[in-house]
Amino acid sequence: MPTTLQPTASILDLAYPELVAWLKERGEPAFRAQQIFQALYRDLATDYAQMATLPKALRARLAAELPLVAPTVVRELHSRDQRTVKLLLALADGAQIETVLMLYPPNPESPRARATVCVSTQAGCAYGCTFCATGQMGFTRHLRAGEIVAQVLHFARLLRAEPWRWPAVPGAAEAATGGALDHITNIVLMGMGEPLHNYDNTLKALRLLNAPAGFNLGARHMTVSTVGLVPAIQRLAGEALQVNLAISLHAPNNAMRAQTMPVARKWPLDELLATCLAFARQTGRQVTFEYVLLAGVNDQIEHATELGARLAPFGPLAHVNLIAVNVTAAGYQPPSGTAIRAFRDTLRQAGVSNSVRAERGDDIAAACGQLRTLNQSKAQPR
Ligand code: SF4
Image (cartoon, rainbow, N blue to C red; front, side):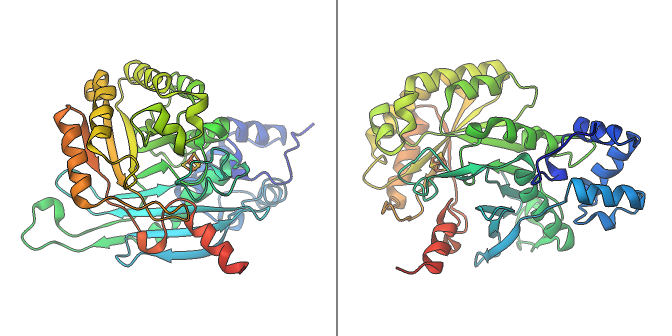
């Protein structure tokens, strides 16, 4: 009896062994799975009609039982510098999510150009961080693996069709010579939702994108960003997939963290940092700590000093990414350049590696959740 899948299931929800099993149950040879993966993830097909290597009857059966569904683009915004593209996507059931493409030319620290997709893993989010527009929406549902993968494939097609070209910088080092990029180089799970709350679908999507027979994106080019679900981080440490871990930290102590991040009441900072240290030691991989600077809230020198002391046990296995907050409905303001420099200098003096992330696409409300909020307030004027 052939496996019955949910009516909303897509071919993109199937891992390679699952596709082999699906084909076998229908009397098809296993090598068809390779052809299908090649068509989906290398040729970036959008329709079974494009899969000329498959018999017509199989294409019809695939279309009927495992539709190749793509989300609908509701809004598309480009930043003024054309290096950030933000999409509001509608899924098959009408749930809306955001996904962002960020393009980086080579620079002395990173000599290769990058095309990074910031992926959503849930529609809405249950964790309610006060500085996050998505957190104010509440939780709608988990995304299926195929809905996570589809966001990356959308931008992969865009770049394939029209490679991003950056100009040469006169007088700059060789790294800044002009060039073109026609593929996705990195993904970060920093869009809407908490990836580790949707653990199984998230890991399945990462494995699909990592599969050598398919998209073949290296695990080290993938970053899972979490508010700190301790049991899930422990589980992630044991996965064979060598992805990067980023923690949304945003405060130097638990009392402060709990004011903006309700998750801190469930998994206190000490427990979270001990888990991260165990993750770093077990995997040998540096953990990134994201710290959104909120003017007058968590951007003082004493906060940097406290943060430096807490991260000292990590040595080189910790890196702090400082990000000036985007202005959202919650009304937070970014600190001044002087305050940001003082914060990072204090961390440096404490021996903690850090960088200031250049905010991307502020002019198109690229911060997580902003576009959906804007679209809703435009659609439903009060
Ligand atoms: S920051 Fe992340 S975990 Fe917190 S509310 Fe926003 S999407 Fe959810």
